[in-house]
Image 1 (tube, helix red, strand yellow):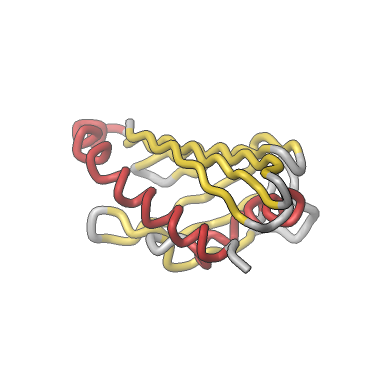
Image 2: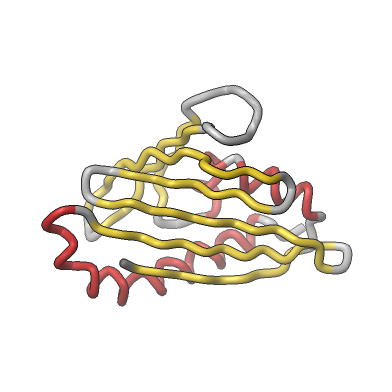
Length: 143
């Protein structure tokens, strides 16, 4: 299992930051590891929302289907993504930080089946991937 825990501050108020993040199809705008994102439903944001992400993964592109499993607007949500080879669980918290927001991003990535043998390698690489994603997120949320 690979784990990344990052925090960042932004000038957006919590409600605005949360709304942007909770629509997980926006991930392709800020995460350089995601080449495309498609929302699979058109209802209001909440538990059960589904999104497909095309992610670069060890030199190839895999499609993960994410579903929102927990939703407490504008404070916290959890999405779980899965492909044939990997499971990702991301918890995002948003809290007030002066006039802006403090965002906590906590992600776990677990390989499935025989690919679990590569978990140590994934753990080493995941930190750098997370740093790039957080830098992109900070840029996307800046005024």
